[in-house]
Length: 201
Image (tube, rainbow, N blue to C red):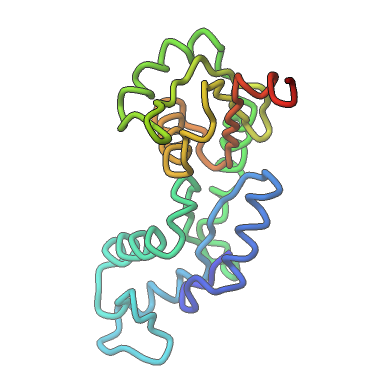
C-alpha cells in the first residue's frame, strides 16, 4: 500500500521485492486518494505535493493518469500488477480489492497446455534478435509450464549461456502478452540439454 502523498518509498520497494521472491500475487494500492480529490479543487500546492505528480487544480482523472505514469517509472518491474486507488479511512474504492484479488488467484491457477505453448514458440523465438554466445546461436527446443501458484515455465535450450538476462525478460513479457498472468510473478527457468552430459568424460 502506497501513501498517495508520500509516493513510492524505499521500504515499499523492499517489501515488493520480498513479495516477488515469495511468489505471491500483488495489488498496488494507492491510499488517501480522497485527499487528492480535495487537493484537486484547491488553487495552490503545499508541502504534501510529490515532485513527480502535480495534484492541485487538476481534473481527478488527469491526476490518476499522471500517478499511473509515475508508478510505471518508479516500479517498472511491477508493470504486471493492477493498481487501485482508494481511501482506507472513508472506505471509498475498497470494494474492488476482493474482486481484483480473486481475479489474480485465477491467474495464478492458470495452466497452459504444453502443445499450445509450443505452437506459440516460433513467435517467441523469431520476435527477437537471435540469442548467441560467441559464434554459437541459442535455440529453444520446446517449453512447458511445470507449476502454478506461482506459474513456472521451463525453456529447454541447446546452450543456456546464449540466453542473457535481457532475453529471459523478453520471454517473460511474451508469455504475459499472450496469456496474461496479471498480478502474479512468473518464473522462467532455462534448462540446458547439455546439462545431463556434464561431469561425464
